[in-house]
Image 1 (cartoon, rainbow, N blue to C red):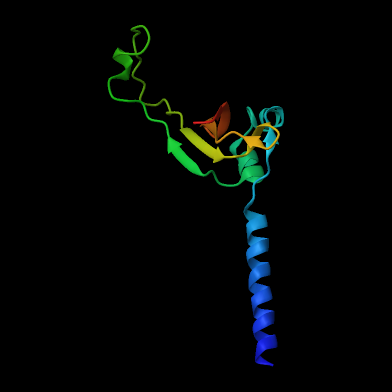
Image 2 (tube, rainbow, N blue to C red):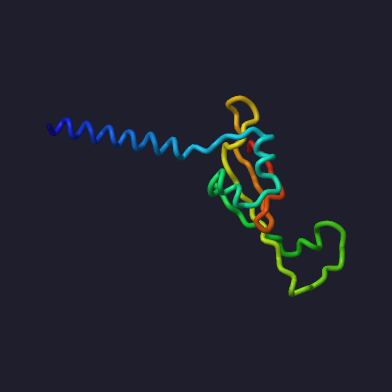
Length: 123
């Protein structure tokens, strides 16, 4: 009787691991599908299809960048102007570029919770 009970417990544990591993897999998109589905769309759509990103970064402007990048222009100091919220989200192995080959990383740049740039990387 004990051996039957142990066997049932072992089967339940194995099935639990199998179901959990299937649930953790992300859908794989082609490049065109991914761009059509996400480019220019709100953050909520990405969360719906892909879930939380593997890596999140906040874009920051280095101190003194205005004096180095681009031509010198007069910067208006307007304290009432709201700063844009810029985020970088990274997903791993969700875009396929050839049969059974996926990009290692996909970078989504969001400004004020809307996707403005998509990049595919293998490094």
